[in-house]
Length: 204
Image (cartoon, rainbow, N blue to C red; front, side):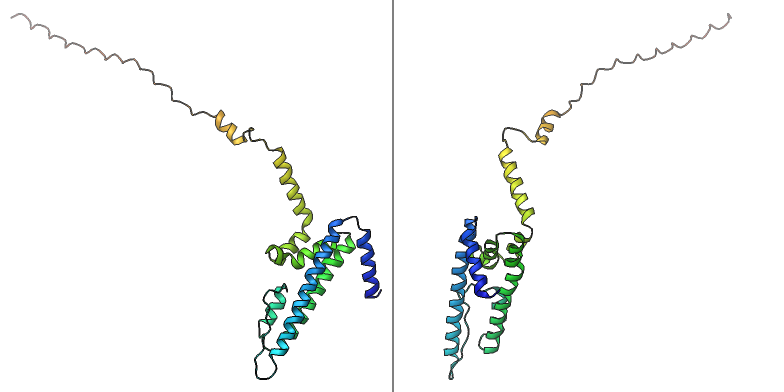
């Protein structure tokens, strides 16, 4: 199937889709992607003009939504054509990986392909989060959604008037007071035996 046929098929799928957020995600992705490519072409054209003659050209990535892979390759030396070309190739490779591991995977498994592609590609720029966070959410989404659902259910079932188990235990267990010591009866001292009087000496 040619690229034109694939594009036409995708257009029909979006028109017949029962997921309105998918159409919105596609439109947002298309706008951001075209903006990124326009910035890339504009900066490359300025780089070519500035590098002519004796002037030293440099490729600027300011205000661009390109992934870190592009910027890191370009930061090696943004004044040489070699690194600019390598950075553009890195950007193309990045989008190939996105197509392979996100867009096509979601399409084969019936997931929202444009929504997840938008989040993984432009989510870091929009929401200021690293790409691997969105990819982790994308890969482990069933567990992530189950966690969110559990939190919501526990929040709905929560009643602030019901005490926690540990609070009930604390109320039931009262400090044991020591019983007052009973006065023990004094032991009677043994009577001292009176000294036996010596028998009177025999009569003189």
